[in-house]
Image 1: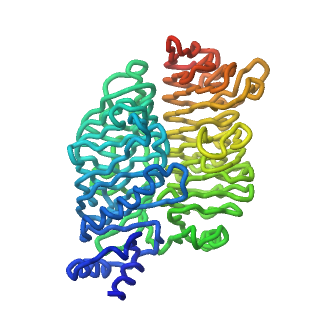
Image 2: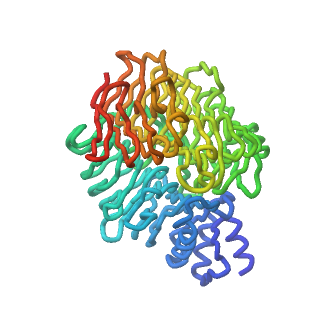
Image 3: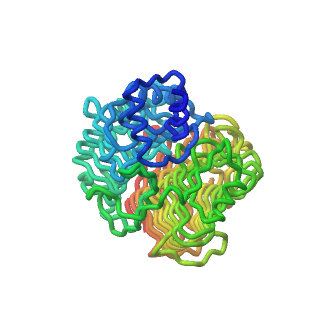
Length: 586
């Protein structure tokens, strides 16, 4: 029995309460049979790999133990990934903070859960406005009762999912501020309900109901009827260029690999309609699997320098220097919200200006010494073109403060041309530990210097100057959500130019001649009186700088946004509520 348990542990079928798990002879035989199929990578103690031959009660016990820690663990240090091998499961999977639930099939239909996978409101009164940092991908769900609940806000991704029923994006119509869904199929209806905003990219469903402020559909096979401003639907028929997020998979022989989907243009709907997502398969042996309890930035960079790709297993990596991705086509894949925290005032990660780098599934958390930038894509002055093989970021999230004092000048700076960003939330914390105008300092969420950069699902909030500063030409943004900072203590400390109150949330720099954006919402929640914002969006006057479907909303009792874009659009108001909308500019 001891020998079998050691083998069990070494192959990462890890359970936090393994000593309490008793297997009968038949179950042990099933585990032994599965183990013979292929060598399993060592993912460490924060990754659980479930096999459908395991008892449902044992799987459920481990899921419940993770959720007991993560249900309200908004700023905690624990990180978890729950991996399900292909097969059939009868379990209920509540998804808490810093938890990623992944099906390991080439298609989501290879991993079938009858029961549920759900995200629930984190506060009373069904309030999901802080239901952050969690994910589900690669699963087929047949929800108990016919409806899957996914009541979420920012930094939550739903990817490569097949929901065999209905999907609701709220909890009993309580507040929610999401959200992101891509490459997913819903057999029934999707109800956004009370969601303030949402982006769906390359999805398919039977029907969609619900709207609030800003709902964006890009490359969706069956978008709902109606158009901006009533209902507030922004519809882009085809996704111009995108690459889906890389994902772990296991074949019939039990061999692990990472699938890197191919670049696609003018796409509509899901990628797995034919069974599998087209792309390249990279054997797991070509990855270095890093662990926060074992590795340092030196050991990680040494492996990257030797030509390895990188998997960062769940946990917090305290870095004394940047992780450096320099080789073309390097894949850096985080599991379970692996978190990079620079401790010495450096960047957390940088890339070279080369083709095809993929960075996915990471949380960049500013450290106590101010970093000039947290993630820099390409060095300053990058000139190469990458249109045929762009650098791509998927589900990359940024945080300054909240878990403790954090400081950064810029969170994400993109210098490389043609870069694609496929879902990001760039957040200067407005609550939690180490939060204050002089504490968690951050000038800009995003600075774009490269040309032809494309953003899908851009969420940027609370930074102290421009939330977004776009200097490159040819930029495109599909969906933008931004709350400007809550906490300027007075107007003097929140003034960008003489006679201009505050800093525009979305700033296209003077000199830019081509830019386009669809579906933008900018919101104010000033907590000090006599603080306001002159313009939500500022842009140079050029016929090739175009914006579509914009809204501003004042969420609090103080201050206002005077104009939506430049000097167009009336001021927000609370009593009575005025939510100005602009359809096209210029």
